Length: 118
Image 1 (cartoon, rainbow, N blue to C red):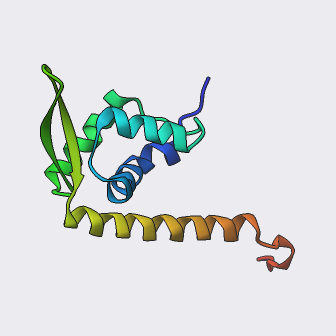
Image 2 (image 1 turned 30 degrees about the horizontal axis):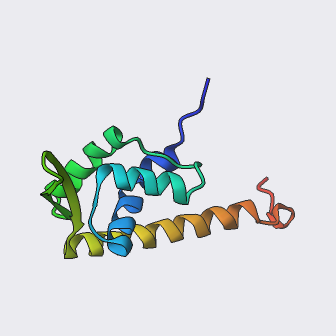
Image 3 (image 1 turned 60 degrees about the horizontal axis):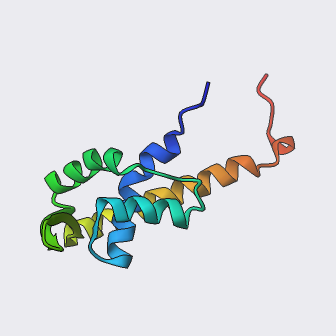
């Protein structure tokens, strides 16, 4: 049985906002491909699984979307980070760094120095 990776599921918003801020406007398939490529395949969000995160971020006004015609018949929906999304990204990055720092402290702690309760 494969274990569920809660780090992964909680990182979708952070990763999407980061890509939109640093790369610019993208459509869902692009974002999905960038995540997989940049993480060397260790992290992936299929295009379809990104949509609930997009809808939530649109509802919260972190991102906006717009349609762009590509070719004669195809229309793609692009996503754009808004100023509130940039603020949200800063908060998520701060939370992420604080969590990673706390985990590192626990993993590297010298437990021989702990006092024993009696």
